[in-house]
Length: 55
Image: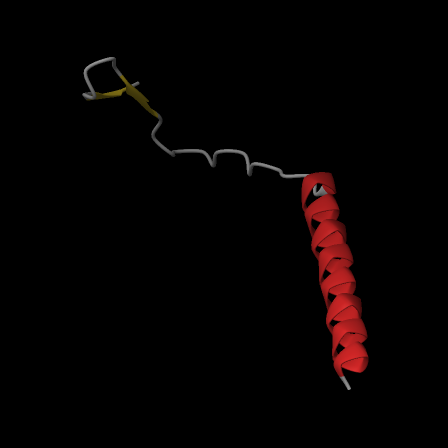
């Protein structure tokens, strides 16, 4: 009984670890993109003191 519980616990731990590593690996491989600005959108720049300046 104790050995069975130990084996089941180890198997679940290893499966969880493998799924975690696969998920993290896929997340790093995801290509992120940024949508281009539409015409008429305003761009703001932040100065060193935190003030917003429209361009």
